[in-house]
Amino acid sequence: MSTDTFYVRVGKTVGREVTMHCLTGFGGGPRDFGSGRAFALMLLLDAKRRASDIDYLVRGAPKAVAKARVALAKKAEKAESPLHADAGAAVVWEEQWHAEHTPRFVARARVIARHNAESDGLLYKARRELRPLEEKGKGAFLDAAWKRLHHFDLLVKVTDKKYLQHLVEGHIFGTTAFEAWNEKLLPPVKQAPAKEPKPAKKTRAAKKSQTATARKPAKKTHAATARKPAKKTQAAKKTPPAKKPKGARRGTSRVGA
Image (cartoon, rainbow, N blue to C red; front, side):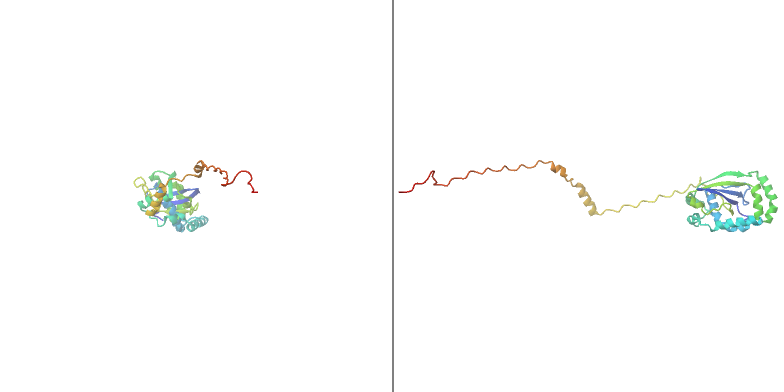
């Protein structure tokens, strides 16, 4: 739309990184650019949310070009997006929201190249010279604008590659993204670590049982018992000799005549 701050073409995706090619729009200065994580997140979100505006952006472009761009936009619009699912109803214009949530999605963002970064005077002059093309349609105008107006390449690294799943290389979309969060003035909100569950409290009876068990002396092992010398058995008593009966005489008895 005419209030779009940038027009973006999705570049290559490698692992957790994607390059976003951004043409400076007409809602600000002719050399404006964005490089923060909040700005990058807004681009990632608008790549899908603004895909339905493609008919406006291809108006006046050659039929073959327009057809190809519409196909890419529809693919992006229908793509599943873990980013949008996790971000939910993102309040992207609020700085506090970015401080709390943006670090979950964007690890880093930086400008790796700028093109046609001329003086404001020269860029405004080029803009006036391209105005007749804009009357034919946004598609014809944007193709010429990429050659003469200021644009830059933004390298975005996300925390998980699934957050780039919805992107379609070559897809073009408009955005009102801006630097919504100053990380130096409002640092990221630290997330408190999850608390570990406290162990269940022991009952009074269980505590007493554990204490009593701890106080008992350890039982002696079998080995220690085996070292004790065996008790001596009583010596067998000697059996006394049998006694002779009383009245018995030695020799033979006499027989009367």
